[in-house]
Length: 638
Image (cartoon, rainbow, N blue to C red; front, side, top):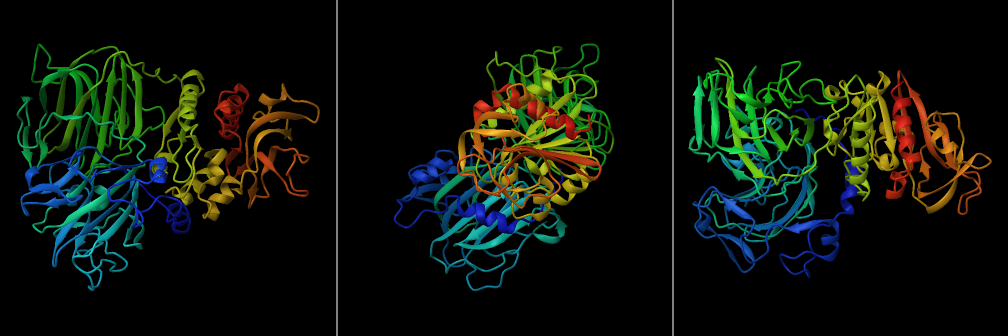
C-alpha cells in the first residue's frame, strides 16, 4: 500500500537524541546497558553463538570467533538472517571488511530470493575516499546514494545505526547521518538501471540479514529495538519449501511452480491445496499479483465433493485490489472491514497477509493493519489453498508460514451492524510511549463493539493515514507521540473537507516541529507540572463532551480529577475552551491560560482535543470514556 510521509528532520533529531545509541568504548562487546534494556533493546547476537540466526545458504559457512560473527567459507554462506521478522525498528551494529571487501546489511528481506531486492540492502563496502553513489558503502543498494562517504579505511571497525519506520529511513554511519527521512519510493533497480524495482513495491516487513559476498567481513554488537505494531511472536513454520510444490496438491486449471524461492501461479481457474489440515492457527505470507490479478488464500477449506476441480468450500481471504466489495483483506462474501471500504493494496507491489483463526473468531491484517475481525461458524478446520483465478493471471507467494494456536482463546465480537461512525484509533509512539496504551486500545475497540453508532479500527501504523484511507473514514483519533510520518497536508485537507480529528492526551506531543499540525491540533505540549488531583473548571457545561462530568461537579462548576495535567504553548486562538485547570491551582502562573479540553470548526470539518487520559484509572472512569465518545460524536457532526 502507498505510505505517503512528510519529512520530519528537526523533530526526529530530537527524538533520536533521547534513544539509546551505540555503546561507548568502555561497554563490554555484545552486551546491553541498563538503559538499553529499560528502553526495550535486545541483542540479536549474543557474542558466543548463532542462536536466533539461520540461512538459505550453508550455515557452516558462518561462525563465531572472539565475540564476532565471521564468514568461515567466503562465498558459501549467502545471507545469514534472523529467525524473526521486523517491520519497524531501530538497529545498531558494527562491521569491518578487508581491502576491497564487500558485504551488506539486509532489511525487510524474505527467506528466499535475494534480500537486497526482496527488501533492501544497506551496502557494506571498503569504499573509503570514494564519491558517494548507489553502489558504495552507506548506499541503499541500487536506489539511494548516501549524503556523505563516512566509511573508515578498510580493516577498521564501523558502526551503523538504522531507523526504519513505515516508508521512512534514517541511517547513521560512524555517527554521521547519511540518510535523512528518505522515502521508500519509486527509486530502485536490480543490477541494471533498466531493470526497475521500486522500493515502494518491495516487502514491508521481513528479516534482518548479513551478506556473504565472498569476502571475510565481520560483525559484532548487533542490537535491535523492535518498533513494529505487529511484532513477530516466533513459532512460525514454513509450509512452502521455496523449491517446489512438495506438500501441495493441484486441482483445476492453471499452473504452479517455484521460481527463485517464489511460488508462482498462472492462468486458471485452479487451486493448490496444502496436504496438511489446520484448525486454530495464525498464518502469514508475502503476496503479489500482476495488473488486474486475482487470487485468494483459502483456509479451513476442502475440495467440493461433487467436483474437486471447481471453487472449494471454506473461507477465502481475498486477494483482489479492484473488487469494490470483496477486496484484499476481506473474507470473500462473509466478512468485511469495519473501516476500510476499498483496497489499501495495489497491483504489482508486495504486501504481507496475516490470518488468525481461533474457534469461530477470524481476523486478517494487511501490512500490519487490521482489516477483518469477525465471528464465522461455517468451517472449523481444513486445508490451505492458493487460487489462480483466470487466464492471464499471475499470483506470487513467498514465505508461506503457519503457527499453531491453542484453542480456547476468546476472540472479539463481530462489528456492529448499520452505518456507524467509522473511526481509526492510532497509537503509534515515536517519542514517549504511554503504558496505558494497550488498555486504551481494548477500551476503544470495546466501544466499537458495544455502541451501535460506532465502528473502531485500531492501529499503531500512522502511515495508513493516506488520502485514500482518509476518504474511507469519518474520524481519526490520535493518542500518539513524536515525529510521526503522517502526511499532514492530506490530514488538514481532509478535515477541512468534512473529516474529524480527535486528539487524546499526548496528541499534542506529536509533530511539534510541524506548524500545520500544531495549528490543526490546537496547541503543543509544554510540560506537565501536575500529576495529582486538581480542580478542573467546566467552562462549557452544556457541551455534550463536558456533560459526563456535570453530575459530579461542585459549584463553579468544577470537578475534582486526578491525572497528569499538561500545559501548552502555541495555542490556536480559535479554540473553543470546554474545560480548563482552575486558575487558583498551586504552581499555576498568574495570567497564563491552562486549557485542558477544546474543540474547533475547521472548514467543513471539526477537531476535538482532551488533555486527559494519562493514567489507567482515568480510562477506567466511565465519565472519561463517555467524554471521549461524546467528543468523537460531536466531531463527526452526529
